Length: 231
Ligand code: DC
Image (cartoon, rainbow, N blue to C red; front, top):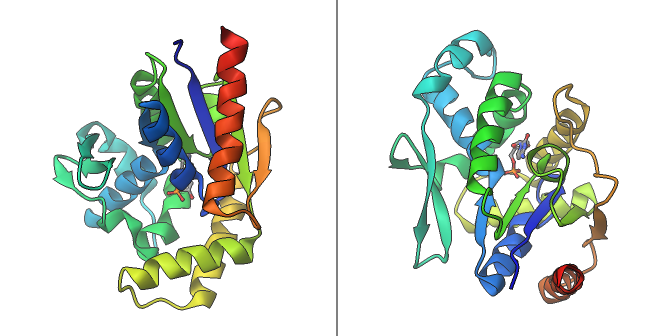
């Protein structure tokens, strides 16, 4: 059977990665979490004191981009690929609210985007890939056979992220998480380089009131129709 490229874009915490992982597993495709790559660059910037609550030295970060190596290694126990920054597993560290609070700023830098997009395109060159992010259907894979744009209300998304962080033992407040979600929505959709927009040919799915199963079924139907169309 022919392989296709599946691009899933949308605002933060819309459940993109959950459905992307399920679909990739079902089809035997590679799953790539492009947000994890922007988060890993952000963690690097934090570790090197290029960014904190009071300052962001963009030039210093750009000058060190060639020293940042980001890779993914499949963890069979978890069933997905974890992200490594310069060969160190940072899967947990990149999911903190602190990284979330800086990542949108880091993602506005064109040099960062250029480098990560190049790597993402390489990872998807043989098709058979499900990639989620903000600019996958518009910039990374404009010719993807299937593009999905996921949405849900900011409150629903903040509640999901809050539950996730509390479940991991992080001491966060719902208000802080909601504020972070709204702030990232704004920066992600208003930045100059590759803002988050729905591609003209993307199918929009609002999952505010969908169970995980209903969401999976919906996406799988779209995949099936797309694959049939290619036969
Ligand atoms: O999907 P996520 O919430 O883990 O993504 C973290 C941030 O990375 C998000 O706020 C914006 C940025 N991002 C991006 O600019 N482009 C992508 N393709 C993926 C993520």
